[in-house]
Image 1 (cartoon, one colour):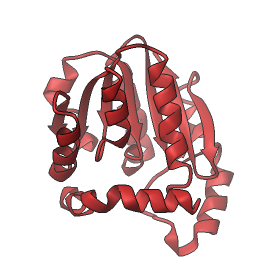
Image 2 (tube, one colour):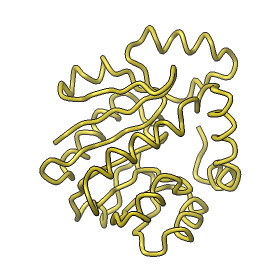
Image 3 (cartoon, one colour):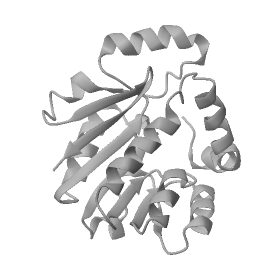
Image 4 (cartoon, rainbow, N blue to C red):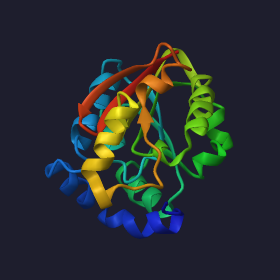
Length: 205
């Protein structure tokens, strides 16, 4: 797993790397643009929402929401990612911190219409994902929604198929979402498959 310095070094080439994988429909970013487009569509169904973006990276999705009048808050542990995103969104509220250790205090003082996380929470263990999602639910406004776009699978069998297909490219340090396992803890969670290795999970408060 990359640490914050690793992500700093990757920041300037991140969008290019992701885009190439998506265009080739190769693991891990096959479906990336579709995932972001779907989350954008869901958020824009409500006007001028307050958004919390967990691990926003260079702000590819967040910038589009910002330009449509959303109030944007976010946390990322890469100072370079924050620098790049802040240049695009000068009035957004960005904070540096490792979300695996929780959110920084200023973010805990608000409630949000949407909490989004794209290709970030796979760095958490399955148990930590559950605990993190539970904590995020408490920060949602009434009828608020958590939207997670990531490498994700309907079931463990689909994950294992992808692992075999990816071969040496598979990243054993990343822990991906398995919908039917999460559903045991969050019965109301929904999953929309976007590609063979990506989808959007949604959870309404």
